[in-house]
Length: 462
Image: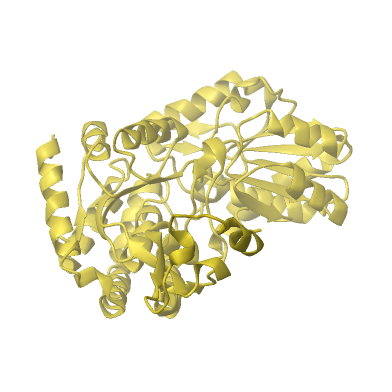
């Protein structure tokens, strides 16, 4: 054990003392801390990139766009809008409650816990941390132990720039995480699997600690008969195989209209070759699976569905390499359709009509993302209105996550609450409702005895 329950309570007490000193509450302090974080990320860009390559074999381009640059852009956006968001929001006061002023105060929670995953090990701890800092909180950050090199640089960087009673990084595995989630934090932000999310929620319920859960699910890509198949193929292949499929919003399976399936498959095979070359293992732009455990899980799926492999399917344990793999003619009961794949394996199913397709997707838990490729506006509207999911795209995949103006989060078993941009600020602050009454007029109407006051009140409250 790296720490005990008593150790964590001491850490939280230290952060509460700093928080209640009022230091974190001002705009000047929050802005300064965000700028400090941004400068540190820029100064450590090379080391972060190297760590991501060691953990996941990410290319420098992918590391910057999906991790480092993503966070830098988020900080810039937060700084630009923070002062405005921190202002009290005036709201109307009903006539029967006058004279009074009503307003909403965005109050920080205090000491928050951020638990990150292995797949985007830099972005997915830093992005919520940006929201926590902007919200005026202190934070304890727990990076994923699976992406050890990135966890090390995160700890080194944050420890150098922030005092521990403000921002602290802790390391550990399942045992340490269990201690953390049972501690008296004011808020818990977790990104990871559905299974662990349930454990987090159960632990948080013991203290009624508010939480954000960013989970996952089987995110579908639906392709109808009007779609531009070349563009659909390119965008699905890109969204699926970036980070070797280890992306929570990656297309988990394709549901394509039977009349265009063969053409779509042909275009996808072409796209894979165009993106990664004849020998994908030699591509500098194709990553690796994060660990033996996840490699074994994915290879087992491929072997169970080996008869359905139409492209790819090879692997190299020594390199943790799994080739982009397409599966055709799978059923809803196939091994690849049991759970979220979270790797470079893509099952392809067909449908006959859109209503049937939407109905079938709805039989699965609500996904974190969903995508539809179509040139039919009515079909796109039907998809959006009739399929519950966290967020998604029409005629693209995963790009919605990069729009700082869009809240990112799941629904149902794919998560709860959202973040990014303004949503991050809102997530890490409590909306405190306030009414400031005037003492210039008596409140005789509200006080007993009531007598015939109901005749006066009814016209005011209806």
